[in-house]
Structures are given as structure tokens and as C-alpha cells.
Length: 399
Image 1 (cartoon, rainbow, N blue to C red):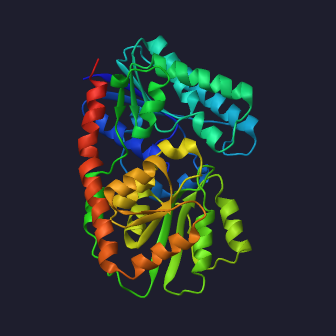
Image 2 (cartoon, rainbow, N blue to C red; image 1 turned 60 degrees about the horizontal axis):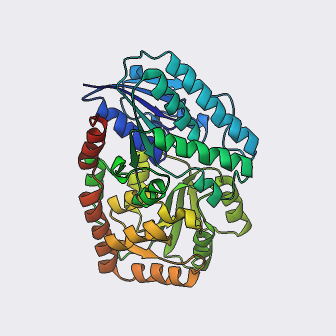
Image 3 (cartoon, one colour; image 1 turned 30 degrees about the vertical axis):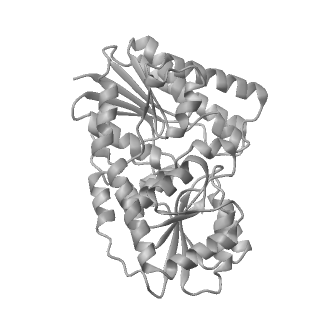
């Protein structure tokens, strides 16, 4: 049994793939190791959301979870306030690390943001322990892709810290194979990089397997579930809904949260898109049930080379729930969708082709069902936590 310190800004009960992944890592590692987790008070997309009991649906050993309070408000357009937010998290994490018993064998950090990585470096030195760095997204590359934090001095500092974190890590875990070459390009040996993708639990996989839908019906639902932030390009989704505005067979649903949600809501009003329902953020179990009930799922990323390496967690969720995917993604995400044979991807702005794809799926129940089954089968083979967690366990036990 090893003593493991997990450090992650995002954790249960927050919504999003980062928090969900760390919840599973924490719960499962704790079965065989002595685990302490250092995180923040739940606050994404806002603190008030977590006053509702529905988000606290799992029983966790909270005595092993240290939650720090952050005074600086995040998710603002003010770059300096965002910088101060991450700086405060880093300092508060370091303060909490100083209070830790030095008998720690492994430090496991999840980043971004880079501030967590810096706290992890401090923990490695102070606690004299092995450092495992989990990379869920490439920072500052992603910030460049959304045209944020583009001040030269800030980018130089961020790239320097990123490289330092990678080189000080004993092992690196990535959730997208697309990240491997980038990190190797920073001078890291490929054998120290482990691809372990986002996955589903056995319970979640069973939900997708229980599908018994009447595909040819009077009303079809196209759903988008997830973050509406700087990396998501929702314009094509709105254009598609506008094309179907007079078609009573189709409705569109958004289970959204994030930096640009209010902007998206305003656009719906301005364009009078009455066929789009925007629903409040919900717990993961409720959202998965809603995805399961839908007929077509939509995915998008900003059209920028940086996002060619990314695999959004929602793609895994969509496939796991057994519904076909359409969207405007490229690179690694497009490759996964094509390899799984679970949907169709289009160029940004090609609304005609995307609408034709929706029409095709609505008119062909056999095709719709087959794409859904293909996606579910792909998840069963490649994205089961019961299998993929064994690889995380192997990395933790390596030293």
C-alpha cells in the first residue's frame, strides 16, 4: 500500500469530464492505497449550483478530501483576474502541502491549469516523492488556440513552466493520444508517457446497453451536452437549428454550462431560435440519461490546429450512450469518430451537409441504430474504467 497525494483543481461534485475522471481515480485508488486529495471548493460553473443535493449523489470519504476556499472569482473576461485566480490556487495548495505528513510515496496531479503543476513541483521537492503528471489538455497551447493570454511575456513564462513540469515528472499520463508527440517534442522520453483515455464505469456502460428506441417517430432530438466555452464553436449548431425552424419533427437541446453560455442564450433570443431548449446544468447521471433519450448528439471544437490533438470527453459519453454523433471536429476527434463508425464529421460552416446528415439519420432507423451500436461497442472495447484504471494503477506502482 502506497501513500498517495492527489492534487486537482476540479473534483466531485463539479460537473465536467475533469472532475468526473478525478472522482473515479480517487475512489478506486483508495481501495488499495492510502489516498489524500487536495482540491478546491466546488465552484464551476458557479458555487450556488452545488447547494442542490442532486449534485452530491455519491458517497465519498470526505475525511480524506482537503478542499481549499478561493476568494478570487474565476471565469471572467479580465485576464489579470484569471491570472490572480490561478495564482491564489497555487499558493493555497502549497500552503496545504506544507501541512502534509512527509510520509508520501506518490504525488498525482491533474492539469491544467499550470498552477496545479507548479504546486505539484513544490510537493515533489518538499515531500521527496515521485511525481505523476496527468495532462488533460495542453496549456498554454489551448490558450493560444482560443486567442487568450496572448501576451508574449505571459506565454514565455507559461511555456517555460510547462516544460519544467514535464521534465520533473517521473511519469506522464495523457487522456488523448494526440498529446504524445507534442510532449515528446518537449524532450520527454516516449516510454514515460502513458495514454489512458477518459472512460465509463460499468454502470454507465449498462445504461447505454439498455437502449430500446423507436427510431422512426414523430419527434427527433439533437442534443449538445457539455461546456460552452472558448474552445467550443456553437455557431454551426445554431445555423442547423435555424434551418429546421419550421420542421416540427426536430427539436434541439443544450445541457450547457461555461464561459459563453449566457452569450449563447442571447444569440438564441436574437435569432428567435424557439426550437432550441437550454436546460440547467445537471448531475452526470441525469445528463447521461438525457443523452440516452436523444437521437443525435452534436460535438464541436474551435477550428484551430491546437485542437487537432484533443478528444472531448463528451464524445466518449455520446458513444457510450449508443447514439450517433454529428459535428464539426477534426484531427484526433474526427479519427476516433470515423474509426468507431459512430457518426459523421463536417467542415466548419458546412451547414448544408450537416443538415443533410440529420435528415439522413431521421429517415433511416437502421443506420441510426447501427451507428449507435458501433459507438457503444467501441467504448466497451477501449473506454472501460475497469480496464483502463489498471493502467493507472500500474503507473502508480511503477516506482
